[in-house]
Amino acid sequence: MKISKEVKVAALVIVTLTMLYFGFNFLKGTDLFSRTHKYFIVYDDVDGLTASNPVMLNGLSVGRVQTIKILQDQGNRLLVTVDIQKEIQIREGTVATLADGGLLGGKVIQLKIANSGRELGDEDTLVAQKDPGISALLQEKALPVVMHADSLVRNLTLITAGFKETGAILNQVLRNYDQTGLVLRTTLETNQANLAALTGNLSKLTASLIETEKELKPILAKAGTFTDSLTALRLGETVATANRTIGELQQMLAAVKAGQGTAGKLVSDDKLYNNLNYSLISLNQLLANFREQPRRYINVSVFGGKKKDTGPSESPIDTTLQFKEN
Image (tube, rainbow, N blue to C red):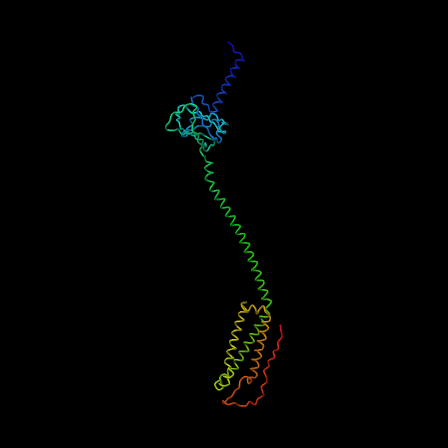
């Protein structure tokens, strides 16, 4: 019997369509060569679970996900239908945990079969549960670290702001220091001539006192015979007063060099400087007059008696001060 080409083509098409149907269902996860039980699982969120993802029991694949449907009448929850081998006894209370598929990615359903309870049959519902997964754990662990880092950044920002404020204060202090140094320098330069003149007058006065002391030593050696006259004149007190005056002048000079107390006034007040200068000139004239005419101030008697002075009459002390104002 001869078969026509049309029959052959029709048979080939039927076989091809059959193979496509069974192949498509196999790829969808339908086991065509063994009997399975169908179970339902309801999840709020499947996190990327798709059909044909495996159902695992202690790391062994015992089934596959068949379909996933949206239950709009239950708040858009998801109904997952799984096929599990008939040899696996599923009891009431068995938990189906949606978990990560490991390093290869994807999602799997992990079964945790209850030890007791009635055995479930076809199209029964399993208890749904979700594993937080690695990303959720990382997020949970990283959240405190992020919070601490944020707090650290805020503290560093506050510290930086404090350093900026401190730097501004230091810059202001340095500017004030420079201005103070400039004022002191200007003051010293302005009064340098006065200080030099005062120092020169003190040097002259010291030299004059030394010369006077040399001349007074021979006279003081004979002081035993001139007790009455020396007591009246109280020359010792005069010398002590002069020494104290020298000490005070030396202290004043030190204060002038240090720029403290009265020295500051001496530097800034020209009237005080002129008055002191006038006093030094007057004292210098007095000592010079004393060296030239000591008889005006000391009455000497060799034999203890009063002897009439035949010398020239005493002239009045010259109290006129001549000076040139600076």
